[in-house]
Length: 276
Image (cartoon, rainbow, N blue to C red; front, side):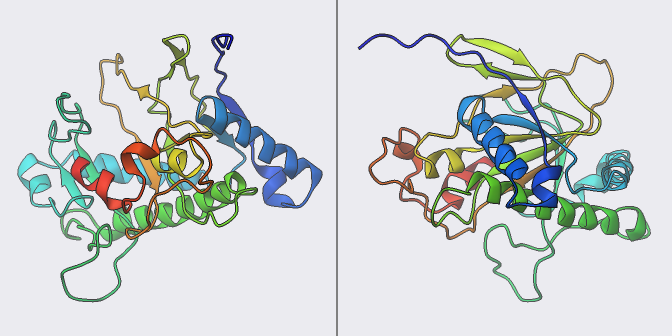
């Protein structure tokens, strides 16, 4: 068998408006093709003319700065369960044996339904600063509104990626505002591809679970962030995840699924929880 030539990676910019206007149109079919191509090559694409109002990320960044400008002792009071609340600088380890990330964070999700503990994974209550510390109209309300908008938008993109895959109703990818991903690894050439940021765009990337479900057809690629600005850098990633009890397996059982050797047959929380 002849060796395959190294492939070039291009980070596509996708105008989602034709699909939003008429999902059954010829123009929408072209959008489906563009996103499928991006998922199968780099695993990354930028979305423009999406359904998220420009004012929502602006309000969310104002809220983020208000939180991270609090005194450390006040922020530490907001620590919660894994995936909820404040995360202290340098305490997140995504891979065994690797260094911790050089960031502090704050995690939230959709508001948990009323009930008593124990709560299911990823459905624990959010941890909010007191209104005396940061008024709800300045923090809680805009962040929940932004979360709902991103959730709706990600559902649309997942429908696009799953348009020809039977029984796929959950998936994993991330939307990033303000382009916290600076470069993506082209594994064929072992080189980094720079991602040019756009103020009007969201960078979307495929995660491990969607790669498993597609038998490796969609790529979960390596990416990195290097902050050389000399100043603080804010980003708001949104993760579109599967249900906690979702069993991970390749949808096409006949497909060779290298990624599935690690995750196949496990529920969604098994590979995720140890990282939080």
